[in-house]
Length: 280
Image (cartoon, rainbow, N blue to C red; front, side):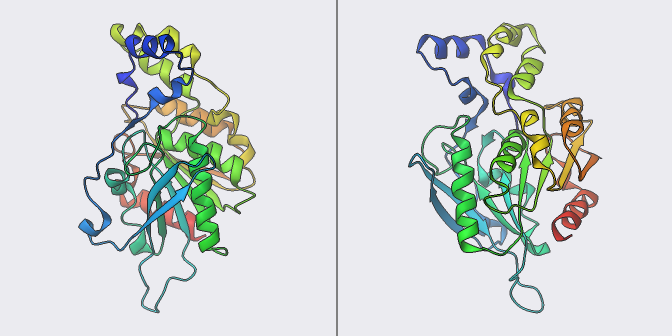
């Protein structure tokens, strides 16, 4: 969940006084401890270690598609899952645990600083983490379809990553759940909600816009895009998600989903839409 309500004037001032220019680190709230593993919910998985271009060790999970009645799932699509800005893959697995049973393999990436991954999270370093993962997937599965699925802040990372890497790693499509136009946009929207957080609002202008999803979404065409957003989302405004959709080129799909923040895949109808997209 995007917890920008934790942004405060004190946090910005501390960073400014210590000479830290990368305010995007304030957007991330990593947790190192795993609360569960796939084994706890009956899933086979592989622990994967990759190394980003700057040498940071990234630790993630790969969930292979379950064998069909005819044997191995040699041609199963692969989803690279980019989670939200808090906790780690041990909690966010709740959004994608059901995919292996449906013939879809899932790679759950923990960004630097999250879970057992080393380093500290910030933009744009996280794109190195994504690329290290895509390189691993392509080396292991050179012929399979690979999609990126992002939720919350992971959706913003997913858009830019898709634009940067879709050709080199032959990516097949992009799925976004609960997204927004840019990091500064959402910081200003959230800090403007109350008097206390409003004190930090002027400092949101220091957030960079170079890596915003709205700057990259049009570059994804002709790869297909599937987007979900609930009007009941209390964290990321529906309007910002729809605005990003309007900036995208076709082919694209928009679905108004149900539930709260990043809860689209709690509902069977949206799960089926995702499966149709992946298996098309």
